[in-house]
Every structure is written in structure tokens, then in C-alpha cells.
Image (cartoon, rainbow, N blue to C red; front, top):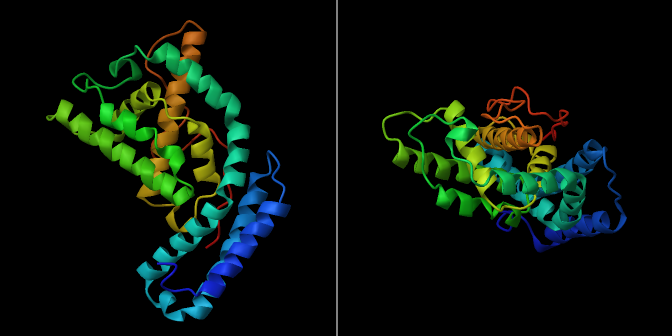
Length: 257
């Protein structure tokens, strides 16, 4: 999509902006909102150049959305290594704690996370699938992949329990079980990265719902792990809900597309 509507010279301009960011921009913990603003500024400048070259893209809402996501993904792919290194460092204590909790929770059942009876299954496909989350470089790609994992969990749950509908209240503990059983690295870093730098164009879509559900399930595992530390066992009670009413993080400023 990007190559179809841009010239080699225009892409070279974007690449120069990426190199300048890589060499000169400093990222500080607690100032991720400034990082989001910087990335948004680079995105806006790139989009202006794209639309100046291909103004007809803006005439169709769907085409414009595809172009926005293509430009944002291209840009984030270029700066990913520097950005994700920061988010990994910031979230390292929580991700290390998550790994410790996984070791303690690996013998738990689906029901111990609060899932209703009848949903017992291995969820092997979903557990293996989750390990690929860090392979993706843009928030859009990561959120799309989170949606794929959720769809996989839903499909495996439907095979295990064909008589009950899978609601959000059922999905969260099932996904929490998959998180606890998986070896996927840097889950806190991935969710934080996708949240802080999510494009405005997909902030209130099914992909955003998938990210929020992922975050709540992750918190379920952390709550259950802390319960083991404190000698209290039982279904995890996260601090948020799958509809995003509370996710335990300070709100991040949206990228104004």
C-alpha cells in the first residue's frame, strides 16, 4: 500500500527522519507521552507528504485508514528497536515477576482462574501462538496479533464447551490461563508499547478491545501470583474489565490522526 502511493524519494525522506530519531532522540522513563507526541509528529509529517503526492487517497475513508496504518507501521518498524528496548527496560521488573508467577501457576487449571466448568482444554494452539507477539514491530500489528490469539482461545473453548456462549467474563480467565501457561516474553512491555503508541485510527475498535482484554487477563495472572505470595488462593480479580473501564495504567494521550 505504501509503495503503491509513494515515490522512492518520499520513502527516503521518511527513512531520513527515522535515522535522525535513532541518533538524536533520548527517551526517558515516565515521559512516554512526549515520546508518543514525537512519533505522532513524524507520522503527521509523513502523511502530509503522502497525501500531497496521492491526494485521492483521502477521498475514500477506507483507503485513508489503510494508508494511515501503512505509514504508521512503516515508521514504527524503523524505530522499533530503540523504542522497544525502552519499554522492555521500563517493564522488566513486572515481566520478571510474571515469569516467576508462571512457574508457580503452571499446575493450575482453567477453573482456578475463574472460568466456568466445562471449559477444560489444553489450549495448546493458543499457548504456542502467543509466543510470537514480540515478533511484530508496530502497535497495530501487535494489537492485530492479540486479536488472533483471542480468536484462537475462543475457538478452542468452543470445542471444549459447545453448549455455552463465550462471554467477556468467560474469555478473560481463559486468556489468563493461556498467559500463565505460555512462555511468551515481555508481555508487559508489549502491552505498554501497544497502548502508549496506538494509532488514534484504531483506538476505539475491536483491536483496542483485544488489547484491553489482553491487559486485563495479564493482570489476572499477576493478581493470582501475588495471592500465592501472600498465601491467599482463589480466582483472580483484576483491577480492570474487558471493556476497558480501568486498566491499572495512567491514561496515555492519543495520537491525533
